[in-house]
Structure formats: structure tokens, C-alpha cells
Image (cartoon, rainbow, N blue to C red; front, side):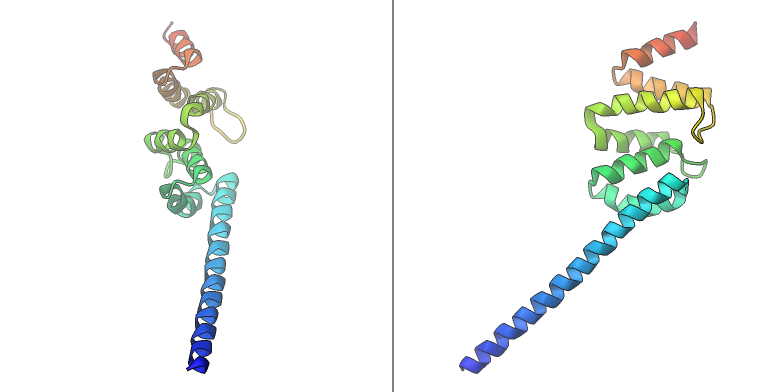
Length: 146
């Protein structure tokens, strides 16, 4: 009887060890996918960034939400989605999202750093920031209307 208990105990230990190893390997794959998604954004490969980061963002990972939000804000025509960018940036940044909306607007207003100047896009982001209570964005919109 005692030998049977030892065999069962060894079996449970081995199952836990193998399961733990598999879990660790799974975590390493996930970390690699997250890193690859962020790297894709930084390289301007927005389609890959969306593909790799979406599962993490949907699970509430703040870094993935932020990077995916920026991907949707600055992405190419295929990935640009202002509404989705707003939603993800709000989820990841909370109250600090207003500052990010204003910074996005400024970057579209002035162009540079691989961002094409786009006054209409800048105004749209100023409106989002203004609606969230940014006095600076409200002032920029008043200036634009003068």
C-alpha cells in the first residue's frame, strides 16, 4: 500500500512539474508576443502591432492598451481608428488620457517624427481633448474658429 502512495505522489509531482514548465513556456511566449507587438508599433508595422497587442489589451493589460491606442491614433489608413484609440487610451491612462489626446492633436498639427501634418485630424483630437475638459484644447479650437 505504501509503495502505491509513493508512486501516486511521484506521479502528481511529475505532472505538476511538467505543467509548471508548460505554464512557464506559455508565459515566455506571451511576453515575447507582447514585446513583438510593441516593437512592431515602434517600427511602424501597425497591422502586426494590432494583431499581437489586441489579445493583451482585451485582457486589460495597460501597456498593451496604451500602445494599441497609439497605433490606432497614428496608424496608417488601414489601422487608424480615432474612436478605438480614444477608448483604449482612456482605459489605459484614465485621467491622464486628456494630456495624451492633446499631445496627439499637437503632433498632427505640426507634423514631424514620421507623422504627416494633418490639420483636420489635429482638430478632431483637439475636440476630444476639449470634450474631456482640456482648457488648452478649448483655446486651440477657439483660435481655429477665429
